[in-house]
Length: 468
Image (cartoon, rainbow, N blue to C red; front, top):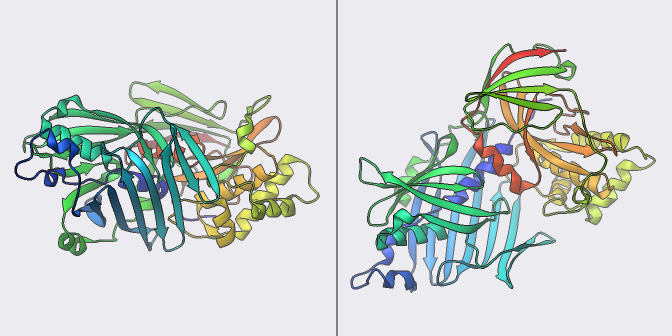
């Protein structure tokens, strides 16, 4: 039943992408005034290297290059997941307006296993995205920013002396297809004389450190993630792969741990500490608060609804339920069946039995998963949802923490609507319906998975009681 659990990789990667930075002080040469720095145009290439650290060990690097209106941000990491090391590469090439707002971009995510590409451009009050065969458009009021644009703007504020005003910009992160407001707030000058800012995006908070001349120094993020200004030689000599990202981001369970088969457990009460909130999903997940502690009760109950949104049967980026390949498979799996529960069980069984259980560090696409026939929880869930939607059965990806062998791991599974109620199943582990030993954080496509970062490295979970 066990497989690798790499949902956390899909949401940790965006943090690294969000953290590309550069030494903007290099832009100022002799004779330039503070006003001129705002309208500087690059006529030569600039380059900055950063080390990417996880829990004190260097697992990769970022290199940043600027030439004219083109900005190129590359990242390379060696991620160890359950004993197997994989190389992950990202490339974000974007073209800017004079104020560093976005004109267009190409984003690539490449691993040993796959490659994903996203192309975007701004026009007519919209950000238009091409994700594989899918076109998606996001309404924008005026401008949108991406990549390290906020670092340019913040460094410039330091040079001009108005950095205490902070920064607030509409921002698009292509690694999770997320559009939100990025906020940077001045906090203090620390004992070393560095200017400290807090940065928040989609609820994820990190710390930025700059010198008083506008030089980026470091960024500290969740779960022991750190980016440090460096150079090529130092990066290469420091690379390590000793940190297993799956186990290092899991949460060891305490208390009276379950000893019965997980499918037989009908009730669980947990004490959750270290986080600001725990979401409630009635009636199967209820939450009460006592000071800074949360008590989470999990039950074998279903959410009944008279109707659900039509969005749960529509294709969307990475869930290509309108693909002929997906529809052909859906017809094959559902042949002769009419009951939604019977069909969903067949989908779960097919995905569980036909996908090789391996850790794939990618942005999962249902079509690509079908072609490769391999993956982890992300890939199993995305493909299952695409097949169900091709059959007009409302479904969605759920994500959160699942208990196994003494710890809680970040995981994804599936919820579908049978015409009366939502039912969960876990195609990665072959559980239909799913057991209740899981804390749901949310549901939705890749853009929602970033929610997980609010919990990584913070959450502590203790079993209070459980019943069969």
